[in-house]
Length: 291
Image 1 (cartoon, helix red, strand yellow):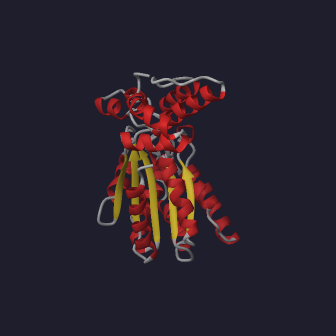
Image 2: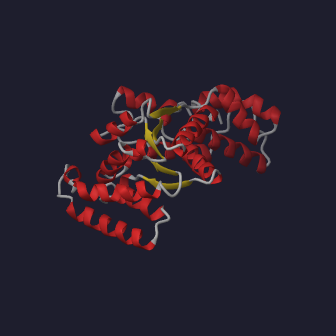
Image 3: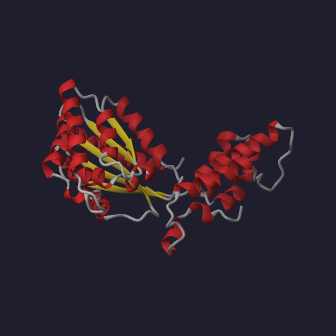
């Protein structure tokens, strides 16, 4: 809902990549505003256009796993047996070569980094390639370093590198570099905002009878701040009330589904969400705390 402009921009970047003019794109937005859905929908679209999309997801629980995210990409790639063996050897050697300590990834052997990225650059010569990494801000430092290396070389390959980044997350130097590489003219930075009142009304109309959707849309927007995940919780609570024989009134039904959606928003936010003015502004659960 209300993502047509973002999808059109990604389509144009893909067209440039297919023509041999590689691009980098960064999608940012507050937690649970639909970044993952946008990336997944676009990845499916790439396949429908006879391209190749390979994906990976960053996770706070795996940030201490060296090259974990880059390894996800290579495991998702249709490599021939020799390439797959080479990739696994490089991943193992790369992980072992990283010195201990917070800055260990920065001292990874550059030849290993070059070898890992070359596998994907070579793959792009066989298929128009889109690499999709969700939650890049939660990826392990070694993977971010390799992806930054790859992004600097994307312009010479039929490849689109697409990343998502939570707006309230703190970035390290390598992530800032990825953001810089995604700026025009060689890329794009897309900000996914919460839904407008009209978007909330349209989302409600897709799930509820027209009269009910019109009646609840304004209050749902006030309560959710336009956050799609919270709106989905309100829809599920509304449907559950109807299924149990209840009669919804003018006030939104705030039940278990909405409560779980709020908790999910809090879990998706970093511990810094709320620790600074910027964090408080971008934290969706804080904006909807009136519920």
